[in-house]
Length: 259
Image 1 (tube, rainbow, N blue to C red):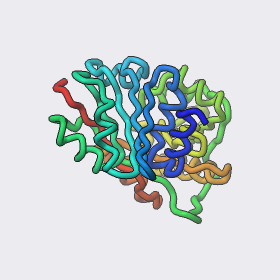
Image 2 (cartoon, helix red, strand yellow):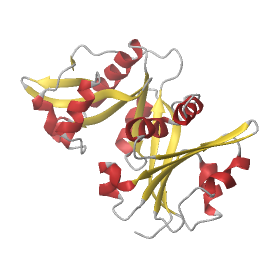
Image 3 (cartoon, helix red, strand yellow):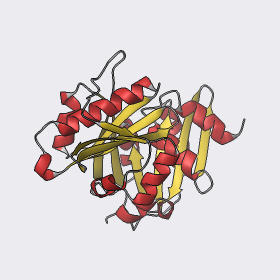
């Protein structure tokens, strides 16, 4: 088995925890450095993505050389992973476990720059599918300005739909007032994202309707939904909690350099 296949097998044992690693390895395996360390029954993974390879990282972290991801079964493996980090490089560490940050902090002076919460569903949960919503499996140009408000580009959206994405929206007449996207993140994990409601239509429960419908539609297709929000986005956090989603991962971005 190829090393990347072995890495994927390890990471897919906890797909929600490792969805960022799985997505990046799938999308950027040709330019990403991937390392698998095995010590007896213990193992560790280090992925190094050139920061210029991914448009989001290149825009948000223009000074960075690499984006680093890691996972390991035991902290005993960490020293071997640390030795694989490129010396003197400016690195953004995207960490899904507080223990990883603590291990790195003993070697680097690190600064937290972003944090995110991921939510998913508990086993057996059912969500109402609202009859006011419109589910579409093709790109509706009327919705693009709403998605663009969350920094999604048209090219990005079209790629999602080519991979089976669908939109869930509410219209007043011919005008969209609230929408979200459900799209494949990595194999079994589907992202519920691009949630946006026009300011003039807020506080009507529209976002709750489109998100609940998107989650239930995703569950009915046999996939695991993930709702991913910036830790400072209190409105999105309240929405997730109000419909009964369950926190599953806290992802943090740390840098070892001053921006």
